[in-house]
Length: 134
Image (cartoon, rainbow, N blue to C red):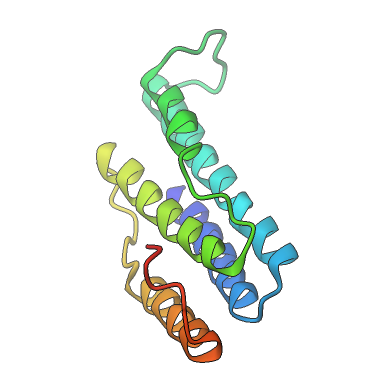
């Protein structure tokens, strides 16, 4: 059940990175902001599985902390910040899954390689790059 959610996250992360590389900030920011939503959906599914129910009358669980954690992500409103946000959200998703012992397909290598390439592309195109934001 978690793997399709992880795949959706990665698909949008790749699209956001491609948009950032092309300096399409409008779509890149939209997609990057959606990554937080993907993580929250994973958190809701994990909570449902842990509680064996989809009906929750009260909050205050350990899962609520994930909403606050995601608020610390870089605001993705320029190409460099879009890439930084994708990196942040990728680590957050991996941490959430690891914290709950979920054995999803967690090979972030291809995504991180793409993000490195976007960093390098931006460096080559502008001369000052976005390497410092990871």
